[in-house]
Amino acid sequence: MAILMVALGGAAGSVLRYLLGLWVTRAVGEGFPWGTLLINVAGSFIIGWLATGARPDAVSLRLLLMVGFCGGFTTFSSFSLQTLELLQQGAWIAAWGNVLGSVTLCLAATSAGWAIGRG
Image (cartoon, rainbow, N blue to C red):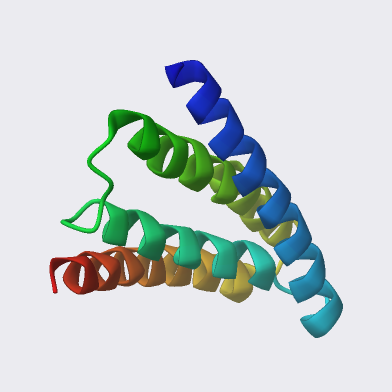
């Protein structure tokens, strides 16, 4: 049952990441990986919120939402590839802005989710 819950959550998170990424790219263009940044910040907020008292008590629900959904929704590998591509294009400022912005904003979002979940 645990594997099924992780798989279902991961599938839902992955599909949502794909659709949201397409929407953001269409809205703002491809010059900077805004979609990945937005998705990772949102996912960080969600897992921060779930990790507090707001988290579901049932193990299967935690596997579905925290491991599956958040794991499928957020994407460190895409962040890494997009940063490498920026570096290869000589866009050093954008690349380092992506690194610093992603780490800072994701940590802040996780903290905000945690604080809101704690009430």
